Length: 134
Image 1 (tube, one colour):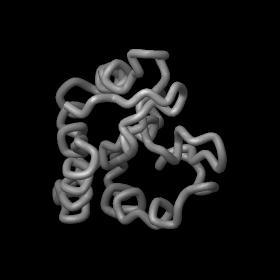
Image 2 (cartoon, rainbow, N blue to C red; image 1 turned 90 degrees about the vertical axis):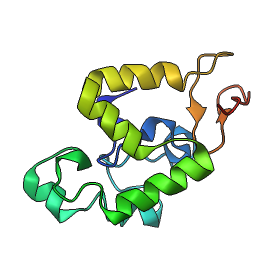
Image 3 (cartoon, rainbow, N blue to C red; image 1 turned 180 degrees about the vertical axis):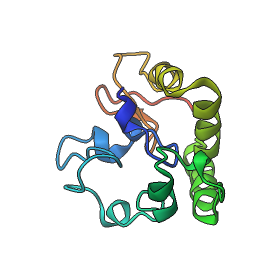
């Protein structure tokens, strides 16, 4: 996994279906907008003026964090996918980005083939094995 694949909101783009798919591969929130779904291109968090003004890489540097948009995104991901953006941001802040990425590598690694588990499908897109939800 790559440090640049961690979005300002704390999303690990390396486990996203858009990044893991073979066709029209998305390069993550910090990458080019080519091949991104419309919602990702127009993402309020990715395009946040406050974050840009502060020169921060992650939402936790903002005085308004967590904003309503981030709270709603976190709630949706916790409910649908068992993953928390706010928890990710707290871990990045506490342990640093390098340790966070190292932990993410093991957390989302397929035990069957070593591929990456997709957060949106809970399946390894390399071998097709499902990851049991925790």
